[in-house]
Length: 412
Image 1 (cartoon, one colour):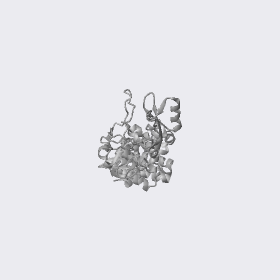
Image 2 (image 1 turned 90 degrees about the vertical axis):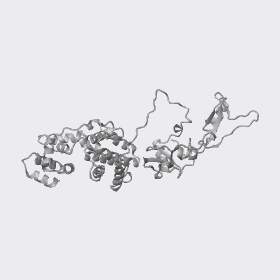
Image 3 (image 1 turned 120 degrees about the vertical axis):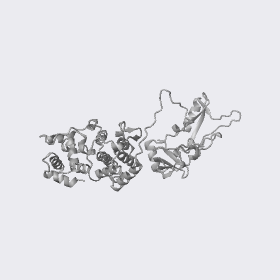
Image 4 (image 1 turned 180 degrees about the vertical axis):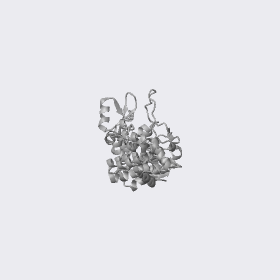
């Protein structure tokens, strides 16, 4: 990987190609001298009349001493928007940074300077803008630029590029990342830090696992159960996990065996579907902060991952919404109203009852369905017995003791 600071000053060795008349640049003096000795090149600016010859010297490869090319200024080179992950130059601080959050009301956030006025930023490209050659580059920025290949110096300079794109190879635009809801993003990041869910405290691998679990928890709490299963399937690399299991009736004699099989062979048994304690609470809190909007909740967790450099994992979380009928480009159509599976349907799944019976019980007794569902999801030794009690409350004799208990505990 090319280091930004190494490009600024380096010793070059040049000679003229006899066939083309163009100047060739060699990495070492020996390779330049070998070409001259072979007769394919002559020393650059070899003046036979004077006998003077050009020798190698220290040059700045970004210096372009042409009178026809004026220096760039922020007023003419700053685009209206600089996308996330763009490498930018701050004309005020003379520093190089990576865009973390794109332009919002005239401000852009970079890793180097935080929130800055967008008009102060330019695309970083010292090959095109010589005034950027003395830019300051922090080690952390340099490391991320190198690792992720964010800056390709000569590919950015269209004016100096000699290769024209082939007609039969259309340019492909990189897919834009959904920025999410800024308010929810901010809450998600603060909640993660408050809960100690950071790579510094957990280590990279445990952090990734925890954030995946939190994303699944946020999706299920927002009633985006299909997307939660699809995310688990993508993480595990098992497409079959995206399919909704066929839950048996609680009256089925083999109920326990069938449920055990489901937990073993479906997304229900994945570690990513079963986050506990602080991690599960974090996912639920992000869901609540989003107003139970599954897309905003997932995007907020993806945003927090990106802020810590985990872009691959963030992409995976956001990908579950690709090609969804309720998504339109980067926006959503009445998303808050579009819930794939209601609370009643999920309660029915967990108790083995008919959805209509659950709905009727909830409506007749003014039950807070969200709290009842949360109670059913609590993991512990009494999980199965709690679900059986609720099943009995709903389908048993009217006003049975289980029903009385449920109504007292969960009535609005």
